Image 1 (cartoon, rainbow, N blue to C red):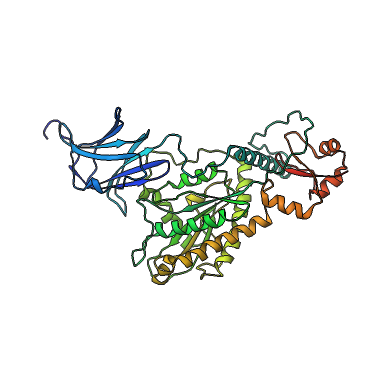
Image 2 (cartoon, rainbow, N blue to C red):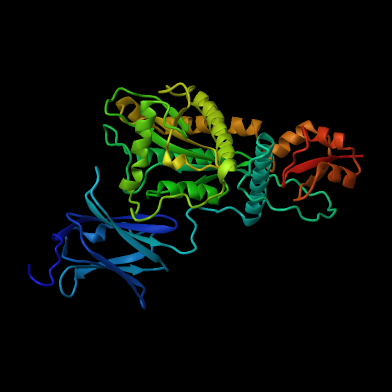
Length: 475
């Protein structure tokens, strides 16, 4: 071997692909073989340089869609000493990251270069800080209530979640009800270099589900008391864990992931609804589907050197188990209502909510569903999935199921809870519960009997939650 020559086989860059997202851009090099890469930044003007050892270019970079990205221009040339040099002319600050991926069942060797935009949100109109504070109070109250229930069930067992200690409370005037929106995180599966399943006529799953997700988000936003967060609002890929984290960051009350099913045979058809299973799948189909969807990170491009562990350890020990059970129960309940609505406009592939270990559903604190709107591998259903009228029918059915659940079970600080309470209760002042409050202390403070306070607020027992709003009857 000649000194100084890499042992790697010479690689050809067969194509370059660019995907622009709100908070990052991804540039993918498709290579005939693995290649060493050196990526570094230059200033005045701002540039990102990508050097590939022993590599050659066999594609036209002028066709890259630069609109909406941090890249103004792409230049290429032969590096001093051999190899390929690619220079990205930048129009904003970036934080670069790169990694290589081995071949899989859809792509060959790839070099992935991510240009992350510091301080940018991945979603439009991120949650208002005041609303986030209200939701954090609700979450804390729910955990405290869950721990109290756990201690009642197992008095001798130590629960590993710390609860904020009571503080000295002062008399404060009644506060208005927050009347916050219920936030629905809508996730369109796949995207970017991961097209998902492809139908007999070439319809790509990623395109169909994005259209349905946008229609669903429009229905949510068009209904008073609800707000939608689109996890993916364009043709780009997000890691499965990142999708769940985005929903958590936006304080979502519910997470729904939209997909289109596929099978090796063109015969299967119909919609399916899936919730998380802690102990395996409820059918072979569910297990196969979960395995195939969870492989999306390999196709979409997640750095194998990065840990996929959920670092947000919100819940631990018994509290985690109890919260997961409650979340799964909510997911199954909502799933049943969504399935019923879907069955009114489309054939059902499964007549019950299936359960499987989908990575995208593994968030213990957010109820979630994965909905397969139909089989894109079925020629007739592929045609219907492309039809805007059918897409609108699917999105309406999904939202009707979600809305039915939340109208029956609205979060305490939501507009829907306020509307329900105003229909049930006589008029009067309101008081938002603070840390350290008790029912008896609140009753004495406002000069009303405890029993009347409990009756007006439909309270059984003595458990109250921080952030919960009580109606104070007139004395």
